[in-house]
Amino acid sequence: MTKLVVGTYNLQSTKPNDSFKQAELLKNNHVDICAVQEINYDNYRFSSEKFNGLAGFKKGDQKYADDFFGSAIEFAEGDMGVGTVSELALKNNRIIKLYSEDAKPETIDGMHKYYKEYNVSKPGTLKNLEEYNKTHTYIEPRIVTRSEIEIDGKTLAFYSTHLSFETIALRHAQLVQIRKILREDTADYKILAGDFNTDQSTKEIEFLRNEFTLANGNKGIWYDTFHCIDPTMNVYSIDNIMLSDNIKLLDTKLIQSDLSDHLALISTIDLL
Image 1 (tube, helix red, strand yellow):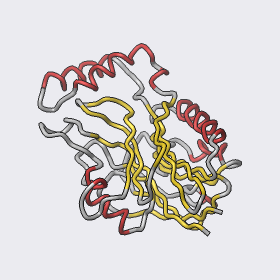
Image 2: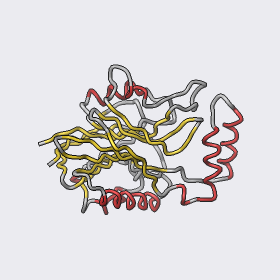
Image 3: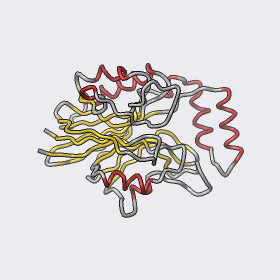
């Protein structure tokens, strides 16, 4: 029996997240491996000093033993993306691009240009992006990261992602792509954790249930992981942890806090 506590936590990129308190929150709940999203990584989004949304997970009293960051896009002279923090060593880390910005190819170049040059200390760059947003709609690039963990002589492939919010069809295409990736993965165990952004209906993920165990929605129990009010959302149970069928789900819960607009979702699992 190999028990682990795994999780997913959207750190909230629209403000300087207190990553030291967020790391402490996960540590206090004995989380071994956690997918994290909305990471501002060494960028100038908030001030003239570089900000790293993973700083508290990398250093300090509550730091995690290992981490991996995957850049989805260059932003504010740095990056923005998703990743994984872990008490177990991560290896063979890689980034896989998901179908996303390709849905609006005509705006890809402009989006990348104005995102990359954005710097809060350079007002002209803020205005450039604001003006571009007035006349263009685009899809931000999305990725999934993969990390390997060796435990008790077996290999666990842990994936972290943040799916598109724009349309059900776009999210479905991304989930179908990820399902194919997981099907072809030769690791002994596979976990996908992240912000699925499935905010229109809980039925968006039903097609995955015949192959995987979904922690959020398991046995009809849904956890509202987004805890703010958004009139465009029909459901708030948008973060999830998806397990290959040889992993037993023992328990799932939310960690209550006001450190982000999302709550961390964690599950205790057993690798069979």
